[in-house]
Length: 211
Image 1 (cartoon, rainbow, N blue to C red):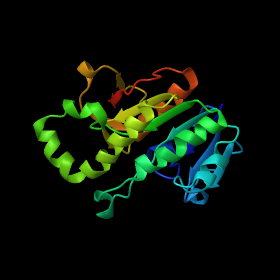
Image 2 (spheres, rainbow, N blue to C red):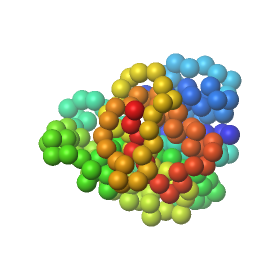
Image 3 (cartoon, helix red, strand yellow):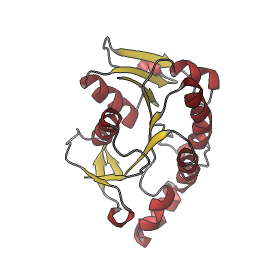
Image 4 (tube, rainbow, N blue to C red):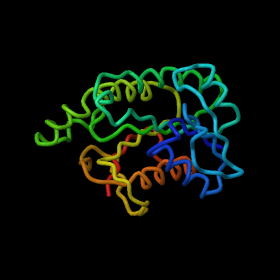
């Protein structure tokens, strides 16, 4: 399988590149700073580009079987401000995928995005609104755009992210009754994304991922 990973230079995106290569897939790693990805593999193609640029995205989509979008915002004060990165990039990606005939899309948002917000406790909502609320307001828009598309989409909503190795022993909570917050490693989120791309599970679903 040939996978396009958008947002491949850091965090979940980088872990996804690593795990997909481990699984033997061809990977096109797309990011502004793609040349800085410290992985060398004959099955890895590093593509520098802008997720908001339609030409860059159209070029990156050529010949791929599935797309994994794992965009993030900086962990700085700037990253706490309003953003439209997630929705704007999605508005570029969706028609480009349709034009390229690529149907499978897996996107990372997070617990608290979309309708999972109703499962947050009062204690969780206060710091969430202060620290992440503006980014997640845009992720709400992003999720709505994806759900309205004709693609075979899966939205992954990880809980609190940790920089730990993948355990492969995490929970995939599909129904609203099961949703709650929890910890999960970036490696385990990558495992979920690649595995779901491989086996076609969770199409049209937005599960919460926790340890």
